Length: 346
Image (tube, rainbow, N blue to C red):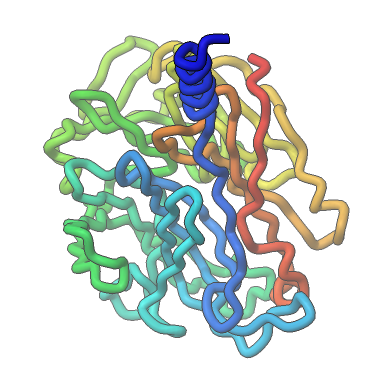
């Protein structure tokens, strides 16, 4: 074989191999002396190579013999995810969260958000303790929402200056999932019932910070209106889910934990974000619930995309928790995002 031809062929093969390498799936190692678990696990694309993770209640402390000890809990934390680099977790201190609610007796749990022109917008839920005697961890109640706005400017999360814009009290819960197109940001909400029936709102991209011009989709008339109504529901899902557009199949994909807490991860698809949405389809099961009768799985979502992702795969995360804090402390396998990669068979 001609040497020049052989060199060209080798270069071609190398470029072909390079073109089929993919960004790595995220890993969530526990860091003894720092971040040792968190739930929520919303992911937001910041740029082509960087993804932000938003966590709710977060354990900060030590690990020994696969157990958590000398630990405190903060109400939220974040992580910066760059493929092929270690996950970087952030809290302001072992007792101070990233998103700090200025109201006495309340705290923030981050919902979904979006990054537009290097400005981060996150819907944060305002929580307070309604029943301090509840030992299952469900004694809290929701007091409303704010919009957290951060001009990123290359700063580390502990250096963020966060502005909190109040959302009017009569606004239905939004930010269960957030996505966008060229003109609008789309915000999914749910009715906070056991069925977790969802609705869809939109706001012009330029108005994301204060949600002015918010409209709700009315599927019966196929119109966008300023008025919210109880008959605008789209489908049943969960209190947290993801909505991503898949250019390979030219459909929107919703991923969630069936019924909010179960072993089943479910999916729906639609050609248009307004629907009609397909029937629910179970695509995976979480095996961890068989480990302990007090364990439950929840918060399944598809991760936010980065450049170089394998578009032939569906990469998801979900959480496993326990009804007892004692069980969480004694099992470091749970209360950390589990990563699941599935073939696209739809």
